[in-house]
Image (cartoon, rainbow, N blue to C red; front, side, top):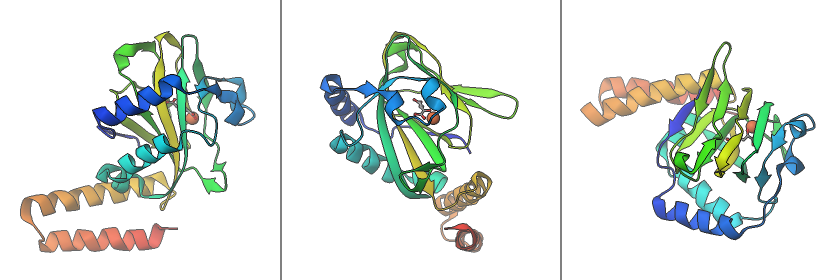
Length: 217
Ligand SMILES: O=C(O)CCC(=O)C(=O)O
Ligand SMILES: [Fe+2]
């Protein structure tokens, strides 16, 4: 399942992150790419092990967001990377590594850190079976997609693209199962908001819990 989460970061958090990144030292993104992704990864990123306070801010922001909890069912948000694409940079078609530091990557996300008007190009393109979708979201918004998809970042032709990308091991590894849980949970919450704790709400809650009991690992 592919979905957007608006307003993950506040304007003041975005300002703080951008101010820190403006003076940070970035390194070639190839240092952490898989052997074949190295050929197509042309960007820069904060070196592994740096930027911890910024990473903590992003983690807290995602964890407080109900859509992240219900849509991703995170077990472990295990990797975060602050990336920068200047003019001429891009990241060609690839699927993300299945394992990172001992954790499985089920869900990937891109959280946009600057405005789409700050740069030309730089769309994240996610390939489907016979089509592709392209995303260039407002600052502070995130796009969540299965790590199993082929995706790429188009070349930046003007300005600079700043993002933080991340990977999550989900309690529910199968995207179709995550989507079923998301749909049922969404209806359940909507019934609760409109009518309170009805008999229908109780049955849907039971279904969410029982499906999670079957699928969670
Ligand atoms: O920058 C992005 O939007 C995605 C980057 C990406 O695909 C990756 O780092 O694996
Ligand atoms: Fe990727």
